[in-house]
Image 1 (cartoon, one colour):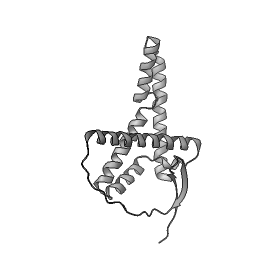
Image 2 (cartoon, helix red, strand yellow; image 1 turned 60 degrees about the vertical axis):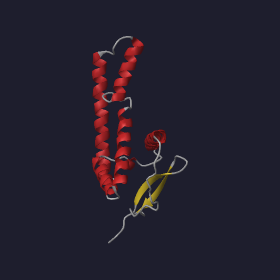
Image 3 (cartoon, rainbow, N blue to C red; image 1 turned 180 degrees about the vertical axis):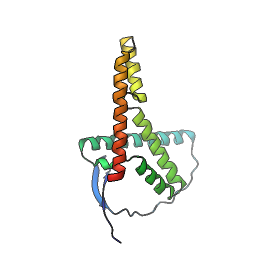
Image 4 (spheres, rainbow, N blue to C red; image 1 turned 90 degrees about the vertical axis):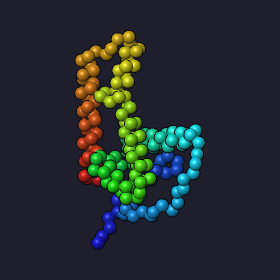
Length: 166
């Protein structure tokens, strides 16, 4: 049996990333979790904090991929997501639920990007209408929607290629 290390870009405390070669072995949880009663206000505050952490990490990672600071292999498609789901499910329900929450938040963030055909693109069209006092040209909307769908499909193909070749 042989081990093949894989280059991984790991986040650092200062918000950057560092590349390390890993063989896929990791330790278990050294922390024993306990359930502590809390107030609704504290639970909401913690939840909002966690969502903000996921959003800022996602934007930071995307920015680092665009600038070339980290590998684009960090972008996963359906195969990578399924593998990660299985890995986290094997670690227990709490890990799996956290993974699903992080995934849902990241997908929700992507949906708000100002890309035509996504909700963020629709918000841009509504803002245009509010400022201009009239809806955008129908032909322009069709062209932008086609471009947006092509961008999304390209990203999906790219992510799937990452799952296969990275």
